[in-house]
Length: 561
Image (cartoon, rainbow, N blue to C red; front, side, top):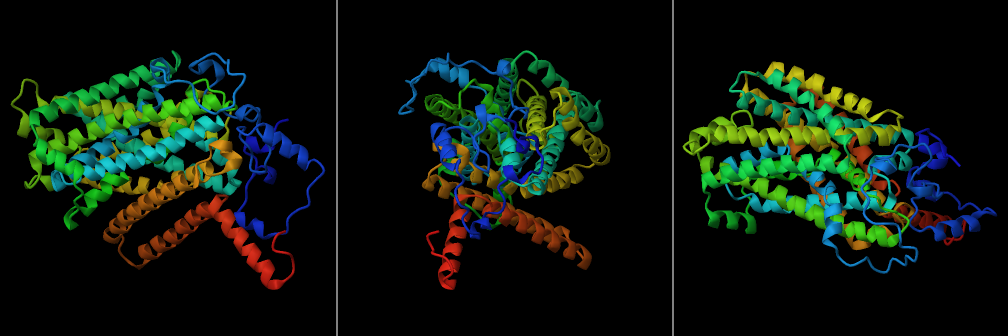
């Protein structure tokens, strides 16, 4: 039977409202409650709506799907009839190869032009001293992305879809709006990065706005490749990642950084008062809100039956290996960029002035005596980073729009809509900032702040959902993992909060702007608190404790009702 909650309507039967509803009296069991309990027990892995009803095959009828059945990569024939879930099948290199792809697409979010700019500025200003932080930030990112993959595999649905089921209409619309804003901010940086690379490779013949228009066409490349299947698309991204790695490794070799200083920088934590801003930038760039939504959808490109525990365990094992390998590659590329600029510009007068726009010129002046011009090698690597991240951004935009709004639109229409959201403001930006390196750097700071604001609106729903047995079944994360992920989330929110306060304290002046900013902070904090208290184990236990004390003190009802 088709559920109205799956269509995105505001029917309260499919929505989990604020958890303090637990303060109300328990309702008597209906005659069919035992039958419902038996059905849920018979399907412990089946995704469940907020009202407790299981969803057949992981999807409501007519709801948006990340991938149709014919688009998915076949891993193995469905022969596990006796599935006790006690252990996964033996490790297979062939299966690892078949599962390889989603993690590397996800890793591109760690390699976009905004991240590269953070890397080069950290190296130029802080030298090798923040490499340890880059390593641990990547590890935190891996933890978050593995939770996203776990959610997608165990439920057969992605984060945006589950948010549509979990939250009331007003809250999910706010979450969708915030996700789209984060997408636009990331896309502007990615498109501008590609446009800068095109300007470099064309020797300045193509201005920034022309590079933006050329980059805008990449959604058609995406649509063209998507028609040939998921594996072809993943192969294209593998070529772009290889191009990035080769380009920046070439520059790394030319720079010849100190191996001892590099090793000390990775292993020995060191943080000075003058490098706090760069440290915050390194951590803040790692978690991209749209990337969290993206990974939970990408893992569904493999044909996995979420109702079979063995299949789910096997998929989680291979995706964990693949994601770890992918982020090891991304860490290496980020390390190459950081160490090159640490070796060449740390302690120099140019360090404070280096940004994405002029980085190639500075590299050419410093290391331009080799066989090939370093400027163009940098341009090739930057172009690969920009193109790959803009295409994955288009991919993520499809899932976000389809999941939150459940719009019955064809993929190419959603791609055009997603691309249009970012291209129009990006062209305006390109025309306005084309002649000013410093103005472009200020713009990037604003865009980094914009994305920092959005981080809680992806992280908190993710942690809430993977902690709920009603959503995850037996694959909900344990208490220790919950505590660890909440600590990581709190750390990321505090770090980005510091960045926001520092930025706005220097930019916001006057009573009127200060009042508006203060009001916005209050609204923002209130919504974040609402998300934290909504529906998770923490909020449920808190509400139950309040209810017990209230009833006990007033002596109206037995505390165990």
